[in-house]
View 1: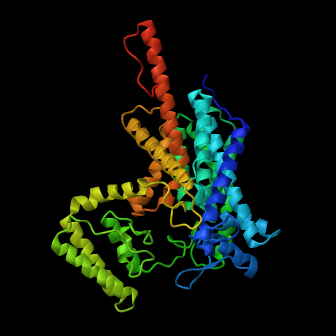
View 2: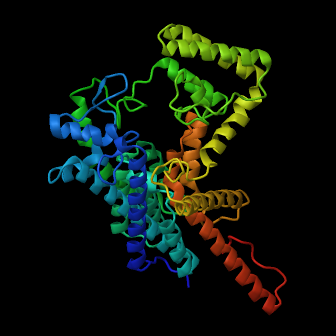
View 3: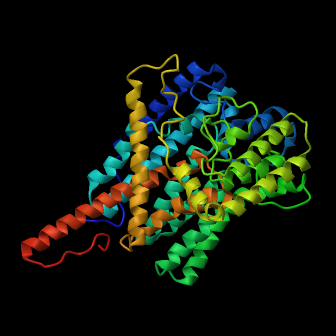
Length: 491
């Protein structure tokens, strides 16, 4: 029988946490073997944006100023909110940087395990099948897909966990409303927004979900006030601190790019690459189109310009590439490079208006979603510590990601046809991320979509449970001689 709320045995919680810590330890060992400079602690990686999070907090501990130095040498006072690294600050009162960072990794790994366990309980409650909820937890435990994000000292893994827990609490608020659950949701939402500010727009969406499910306007307003209180408690001290350093108010960070200080030519070039439907941000990836605009990329570029370009437009892009290389060498001015980028962008829009407006944004979505799911893991033959059995781990990571992507696609198709009536709310977070990054901002980076990995896996198993319900109803109706079975998703 389907329940209003359910909880899996605690053994599954311990299983998924222990398994993910194990994958994190293995991945860290391989990362350090390949690049020893990446070691921050024993299992924590000094890689990516870690210096703007934990690095800024370490600077506060040692120099009494929360800040970091960006690539231009500027001292950034409000690039990242400090809330993600607050546990690191507490741990540092008792131990050194490496051990404190390792504890932060263990904490965010435990959060991810808790999120998978809670989501498994929700799946069990919705489907009425305990084995489906347990299967979700076991799949997460067996797959190292998250290992890279768990080891990184940046909030991708924690954001995934808090978003998932928040969605579970929203679901629970519809099935078994209580003030305690609402306050838990408020705290989770506040922490999520403080470490991943772009999720702030999901809070109004949650209010709309309640209205859609016929929660009265008065009660929704009350819930909105409750959601606001923890967020204000976390953010007001940040606002007061920043008021001493800046002459304008901002709710989260000092600018859109967290103080990274990108120059206008680079931002224009990103827009041009996105216009072509390419990956405009991860220039260090050889297959990314943005790699072609870096004079000395870390690895040789394997990307190539689109084959459909006319000879004249391709020649203009080649000249633009040469101009941009000259800019990186300091041989041309910013204004000259910007004019060249804008001119070629206008020519492309004129020559390929439909591609620019419709096809290329969809291509960015494809780049965001379709990849192996194990690209960032160190399980490859070039690693000195690689062993043949690790190929199985790589395959499990790819299989788990493929399953999550299948769940998203199938759920979206059923939602379009109106057959996901009672569960469409679970599609909102992944659709929000698709609209926000590859469509609205033209950004393609795999870590942006990791936040909904568990939710997408959940959708696949939920649809499987719905199919089982449909099959069972059909069999029962056939036994009773009923001429027509009830459609899938209308239970």
